[in-house]
Length: 378
Image (cartoon, rainbow, N blue to C red; front, side, top):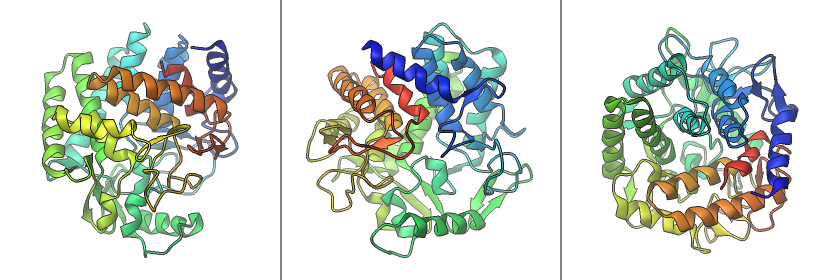
């Protein structure tokens, strides 16, 4: 990788590192807490840099785990609005990227110990035992997908157009109020929002497979196959050649809107032909391939807003996951192209939280620590 990408990635992580807490704040001004999948991506970036703080960050990300195995999507470093009944952490989770982080750390010579491996297994056990409906894993708030304001959730709203962040936040509060929490404080159901997202299920199936292979646990590998089969049966949209989301409580047709989530379902897919059809859309300028990386929404879609939060911009963490999906299915040429363009775009954006894929202009928090994944896009 170019020396400036490695140096800049390290600088982004260094300036956000809190030695006492053992993790990076995504951005001290905009995101001054710890987020689960952010820290997992930080661990991957630290591993690419050969820095032992990657293992410390993954350990920190899982240290808020509840006794029942649930892993919260946030741990609070100061006053903030509630995300459930727990005073110091969220009652919701986020995509389980921890197995992928553990694999990359192991490849970098930083293998997880038995205690950390146990936390990863218990986290997957909790998802498998508590969050399955109709064979798929469900989320109980858009926060749990990581793609908070995606147009896929528009059917749960009142149909107001154009998209407005302030208006969306009112629905965040409604969905929070609609959640029921278990005795340990984790969300267990919702009267308004329950969905089985393609990307969340794909990331989980991928993580189960990685954890099963890394830890020698055939049970996790079997779960990966079972979840992948449910995705093929229930989430594949043959007309779009994408995996779509499924609404279980509330929602409607927006679950089938094409987004990069539908491509990332290929992470957990079992059908190679379908996975390749989805991933090939990363090559297509009429779909997700843009002048500056991967658009979140197809460029020809009427819903495409390249500057609007989760309405079209390119994202570092989704770019990284797209590369992993390509590599899983042996599309090494496509993986290399996506990685190269993503690395270039992240660097040009100023290591921004996300960026306009048409112009390359950075958006959101700048810098944002998960942009350090530029050093891992090789």
